[in-house]
Amino acid sequence: SPSGASDFIRDIVRADNAQGTYGGRVQTRFPPEPNGYLHIGHLKAITVDFGVAKDFEGTTVLRLDDTNPDAEDVEYVESIVDDIEWLGFHPVSVCHASDYFGELYEWAELLVSKGLAYVDDQDAETMSANRGSFGVPGVNSPDRDRTPKENLDLLRRMRAGEFPDGSRVLRAKIDMAHENMQMRDPVMYRIRHAHHHNTGDAWPIYPTYDWAHGQSDAIEGTTHSLCTLEFESHRPLYEWFLNQLPLASAPPKQREFARLELTHTITSKRRLRKLVEEGVVDGWDDPRMPTLRGLRRRGYPATALRAFCDAIGITKTNSRKAIEELESFVRRDLDRSSRRRMAVLHPLKLVLTNWPTDAEGNPVVEYFELANNPKDPADGTRQVAFSGELWIEAEDFAEVPPPKYFRLSPGREVRLRGAYFVTATDVIKDLDGRVVQVNATYDPQTRGGDSPDGRKVKSTMHWVSAPHAWDATVNLYDRLFATEVPGAETGEPLDDLNPASRETLRGAKLEAALADAEPGEVVQFERLGYFAADPDLPGLFHRTVGLRDEWAAVQKR
Ligand code: ATP
Ligand code: MG
Ligand code: MG
Image (cartoon, rainbow, N blue to C red; front, side, top):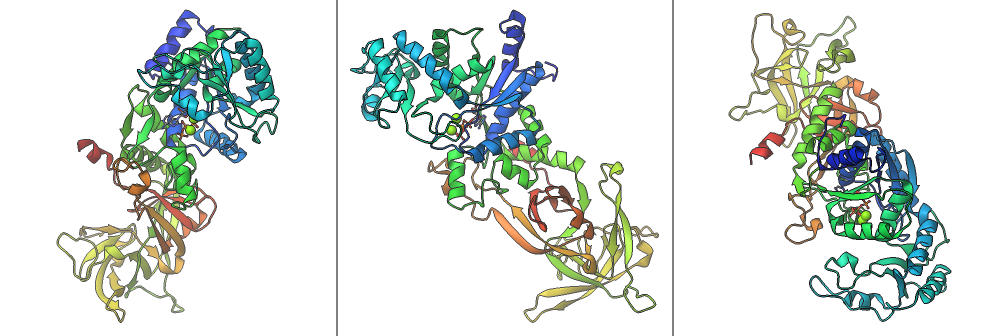
């Protein structure tokens, strides 16, 4: 393939192209159910569906798999369309399974007339009991031998809305003793008098996933219907339905690949919804959520997400990837693309007692020209104000330095990044004995951060000029789930929630240039990590990832 990627899915497409199965056409579809927001698992399916099509100059349809009116909503439809665009993929069209309800129904009547489907009056419990189990044949429904004429009449009355919810279903007539449970007369239609976000009140019956999916693929002209491994057992049914229908061209092919799961992460919409509904997180777009919305607000670049998925490739065995691997893609991407800025999260006042004043007695202000991004000189420089009153990180000062502590302490000289060498002289404490101010002297000879006499210091610290700083709120994040496999012990992921997954720091001190950060922009706070400006709330930043790469260590474990 042009992208150079090779895997069993691309091999199948290549073979079909060689044999002319679809006349050289390649079309895939991404079929989310609009009952929640897209998450990191969907990202995998999206990169497979769109990536494979693109490699063969094919197209991808976004199909909203909206066959269940109860859970679905236009809010989700809109977010799905938007999230896919954000990732940088462009569906050739946006369709709904519900667009095909008419055709599906006509095909259902066709199966009924051919004696291949029947209306069953058994209640859900009886039906389920009569299905048998693996190795134990099921029991035929007493309604299984209804004539096509009777079935057609009942189906039409189902469609006309004559019967209450749950009173009857339409089933395919296949084999109640089939070794594959999916083939034991699967349900095609359920009665459900419900308002649908796309079709309104037009339909009192709704098709099941199995009845809708392959037929929608065929109607849309999908050639390769790629899905996750749990649908493997549905494949014979997918093929059975298509084989009964008068299709104009070769039937689409369902092929399955492994799901993406990550450590410390859940990817079930039902469970993610629970986190939202129970107020564990602020919403679907909370930066701790593995939703595309959450990751985006957190500052994960779409390019990094795609690169991660491309790197892990397509396989046939389910496995859980380390979240640290994804983070290393994010970090590498941001290292290239993000601007450097200085910010102090836990501010401690540093006063330079020998800082000069001007003719009017006001403290002098100096400006240092610092690179926006040392990895990208084309990104230019910025002016950073410096004065005799600064904020430094509280943890960068120790009144009594522990062993191997090389940052500031009384009598110790350090470098203020890009500015001057300073030496701490004494401290001012509050009534509780806490250090509230460090006094220091600076060496005017070290302007720019180097000493003409070649004197070395063991530490370089970030700083913000106090009169020029502005206050912001910064959210630091830890894993939402404390364990690698949430719920592994109890079966309930919520039991493994990390109670300290978010720490909010108010009154962080930011350099002036950060006031110009674009909504959603990610910048590197020097020595602290990458931080995303909230897309909606000015003055709020989210830590995207820290600076240290933990992926190598995880691999060694
Ligand atoms: P959930 O269980 O979270 O509701 P789903 O599979 O029902 O997920 P859909 O919206 O119906 O969600 O899925 C759309 C597509 O995304 C399907 O083809 C599905 O296989 C795929 N998908 C969902 N989760 C993952 C995952 N973790 N890894 C890879 N693909 C996934
Ligand atoms: Mg689904
Ligand atoms: Mg689902």
